[in-house]
Image (tube, rainbow, N blue to C red; front, side, top):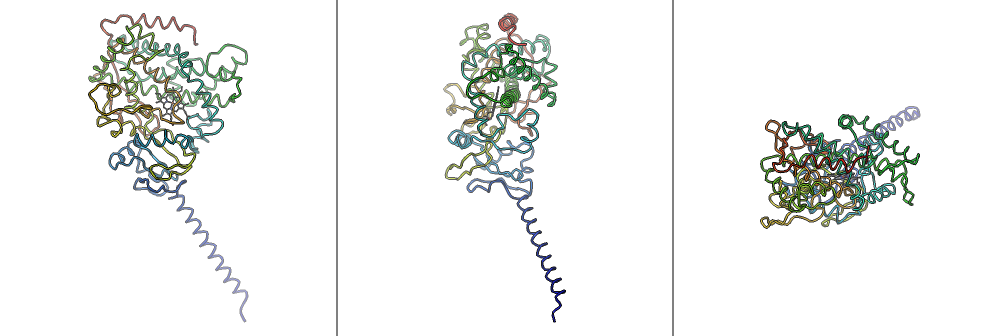
Length: 503
Ligand code: HEM
């Protein structure tokens, strides 16, 4: 007779073994998925970076400077678009100008979304709310972009001229004073940072900051967040009390149109403006001035000076008009070349595909993260010619010498392109134009002998592991132009014209 007790035990043992094996296989399959899997499967037809490792994907292979690693790979292998794994996220990186146009301009509606990142959206952005530049495409983002569009019209920018006047005039005055009126050398970085920060603060909250507070605000995120909340609350109080406050926040709070924004959305626009504007503008201006200060740059300053006089008429007219109109083609070219050459954001904030589309016969799926490698696109020799690696404003002018025709809008990718392109292109170009004009008409900008700038388009950046570039420190000397004596008069005229406009 069969012993039922021992049969049961045997069955139990088999069952236990089965359960252990099943659990182990489930665990192994889960582990494999976590180690090697990606949110979107591999895309057929697009080359993938080599040397992915479990869990990290290509993060270690890419090192701390992702744009340069991708750019190098494009140069060596001619891969205009590459795929890579960052942890378990599959990304596409676009490295050539032509492919960037295909993805962002010709397929603008398919690349309008932005991905959600746990760390950013759940942790970092808790303090001030997210920015428009990191928000996925939804009804709220649509409303915010519409409101921003209305703030960036040509008449709105013309109305901002006094703000630009105050800030560019303050920059010239302060930097010259700090350089002991030409007697000593000066590190210009903090002045450009303060100019950009003040511009966005005035715009959003009708307030500016002292240099001491700029330093604290630049270095301490918590202080900055508290302070932005404080500034916003002041505007809310002023609007509730019926007091006049001439700024974006007040305008949006009082808006009675059908697209009225919530307070959280208005705060988000403010934070987007302050964070979107201050690092980018300051980096572009600082880097361009570093180039101008070199020996080669002296010739460019001279060409710019002559062109400014030709198109504005006189130094004084240029000082007054530059905040209202960009008349000098050479300075316009200088602004454009400065942005092309020194990318304030070398790898653009990611987009996410909203719908599938076909690119050169390859199916690009929905829900895929796409980055534009601006550093690579802006130095793409196929688009800009064999001298793409040189800083040459003349490439944007008809000079009859150079045969490669430069691209039309967006000219370069530092502002991005397509449906989520930077909405502040016109005002940023105007501020950079006015800054260069006001410095060039009064000074020869010369590099320091001991603290030379690094003018290389990759190595100018102090920390290549972070999203926004920041120029390494250097010093310049400001020598007054010999026959131009109107500096103090110009500064005084700006001061009088804008007195009492802002606190
Ligand atoms: C030289 C100056 C600037 C540069 C190089 C720059 C660059 C950029 C770039 C690359 C993007 C992402 C574009 C894309 O995904 O295609 C962006 C977005 C944005 N920028 Fe700028 N920016 C500058 C100045 C400013 C200023 C002054 C403001 C506001 C006052 C501003 C506000 C924004 C906003 C709100 C977005 C988000 C747009 C969206 O996601 O829909 N930017 N900017």
